[in-house]
Image (cartoon, rainbow, N blue to C red):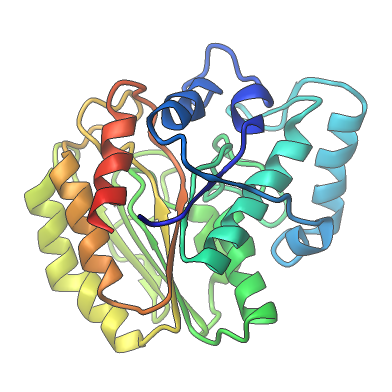
Length: 284
């Protein structure tokens, strides 16, 4: 089975009561998949590969003061949030090391270099990508994002970088409002899809756009922002992807690169999330 990387602190810390991004998300995954490796926290220096040091320090100081504040309208910072965000980024790095799947929270793909956004404090998958380039000598990386929301933070961090291809399939128009028709460039491919799309539409996009683009880029490492809020029944999405669809996403993307890892992003229906994640694990 693909190695799973996570930590009990994702269930215990960074409380977010009344919000979709909450501790129970990881609780149901730990119950469903109890055989996992303990994540190690990233260092502040590793976070600084993608984030302004002043912003990292803001998150650290806010947590250290014992405050609970909102960094934007969706993103909470609690006394334990800095530690959990380091752990989430470290889990992503460890997933790259092990060729595994990091089951962590909070998600990361909306986080900008200098700001929190959309539940996200640090952009874990971006940190893992830069770490792989620096520490493993990986030259060309693809980040494939199938979360229902556009990964605007990841796009912004790597915009114009010829060594990283960012490919995002997402509902549009939808939060955060970016990634619409006609956006992108040579190393940013946005595939906006209308609400109500399911397996058929997503797999057509894989066949027509995602797979040819990734194959042409010839990556040394393929990272997946594996959001499951495109799944049918998710409260924050309007898509209809099934367990079979997510399994097909995993199989198709895995064939495109020898070195491969996944990082959990969204997915907020506690009843369906374990089945969606399990379908990907089984497919790999």
